[in-house]
Image 1 (tube, rainbow, N blue to C red):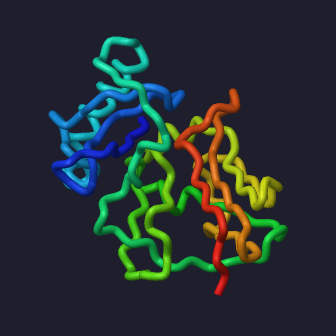
Image 2: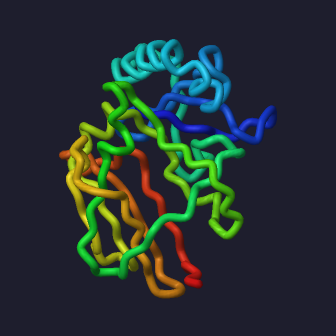
Amino acid sequence: MQLASLPDTATEDGRLVVVSRDLTRASDVRHIAPTLAAALADWPEAARELDLVARGLEADAQPEERFHERSALAPLPAKCRPARGASVPAGTSITIGLKAVLDVAGTPRLLVLVAEAPEVDLTVAAPAAVDADALTQAGTLMILVDGARVGEAPAALQDSGPVAIVEARPGATLRIEAEDPAGRPVFGAIELSGIAVD
């Protein structure tokens, strides 16, 4: 299941939509949960209903609209703040531990960090949030700096170590994306241009 937030004048968190696997179509799910925060607040119930919509969207049995990644808001609620992560030099071999993030008694989970970090650009996020099932179907998680692949890991639920942040030179473009075995994006791409390094 893939979720996204699209602009909505009623709330800064946007309106919640379920997104098709190929990231081209979306179905409004405000009748289930108006925002991602509302869905997370009642996740066991909301997840079941959202999954039904996702299945219906893939079967062309759900009302839909065109989904444009660039129109999507950061899927996490506006009040969430990422904590500052550790870094490794660009080009260093990195590992990305997904089990630590996703494996909680077998239930889907989102990583939401709430430490204050005003120096972090909070507008940079993937256009879609994905559950553990969607991430498990991904083939590869890639990290590129200025178009050169500096990190790659199987996007599977295995304990391969801690999540790492790649450190790049000032002005570099950082792009992170996951692809399914057919090469299609799973959650869109996170791209940040003109990185400022302390």
